[in-house]
Image (cartoon, rainbow, N blue to C red; front, side, top):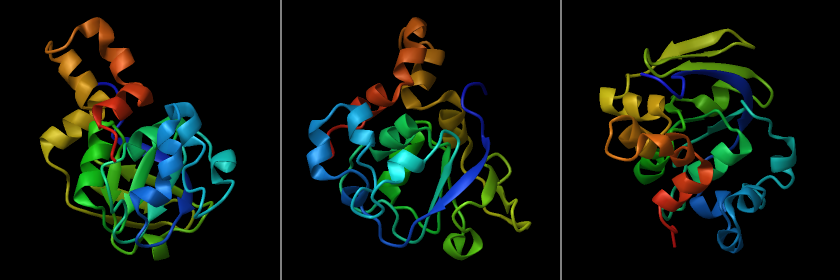
Length: 189
């Protein structure tokens, strides 16, 4: 596998339970280009967060993370430089959109009590292992299917198709951009 690493570590931002795609990608932001829309992520939940998040950070959330429509939120996270998502439970459509965009995502039971804002988390999708490097709390979860790991490692479904020759290889880098990932996931309306 090449491209996106399956091992990620970074500073943690912890959010609660039941965050919807509306909470992450407000309806008014859907009219904006991806770089501008990304500045609206979590605006109603944690105003100013997008000014604090740094490339390599990890978003941690509780149960029912990503309920709602099929908005291309994973592309917005990638635009902000978020390196991975950890949640106690993902909405299945939201999880698949993260995979399609090449954004590593791991389900970790009790994630909101295991991590605190500012902790450093490390995950390894290939082994299913995770650790809070700040507290040395660690565990393992079931490993994702090989196809899912291949898609994430490739940087998303479109770059993977380019790597396999189904799309022009010279477009592989372009196809991994957040804007193209968002377009590939539809409007989410």
